[in-house]
Image (tube, rainbow, N blue to C red; front, top):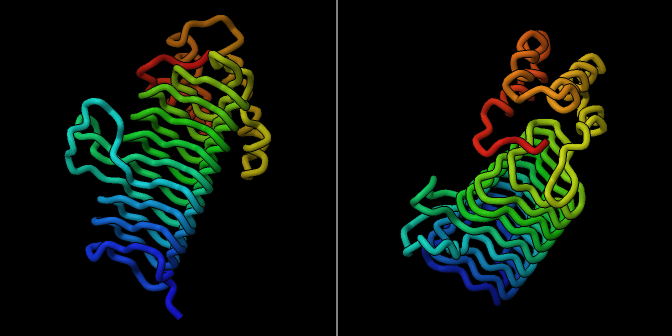
Length: 258
């Protein structure tokens, strides 16, 4: 029995590996590559150049690999690259890149992109991230591993969302969010750290306590960012987790959410 529904439209140049399923009324366009075991639901549109890895599942009404609406885009060949074991739920939109940036939008492995979320051009999503319903990422956004963006989170272009960070429902992010930090509100404000997420992922209590102290150094002692980073020099040598927190602040180009 064929895994490609006869009502699907597959461009002759598309490359589908063994075990790929494509549901009825879906369109797989030119320049699309799909890895083994990936399941494409009904009414999905895939446009290339797009490479989709293994064992992903894309649900109905999603549009993946479309041109960006960026006004600078003039039809240049750009890409979308999706890794393995991702779940892309109903109505998700993901755009390819622009030549003004990396010419590529990237989604890593083991991510959950929930219904009606949007991933803009040239964005980079790491691994094990969750984008809850109606989250919208503008172009050029970077989201590091294990970040969780709750429903209706909005992220301004060029923002960097640190690893293991968390946003509350309806948060509007206009500055970088350091690793581990929890933000809420419009505009976003730092409230705490994602301690529950750390415990679920097996962080030691010593590391969590060190991060709690590091958070207070940056957010509770009235220091400038530069002063706080200096204070974090020694703890960062003792705890790699604190080094990740510190480095995410040092790398910020938009200023951090405080």
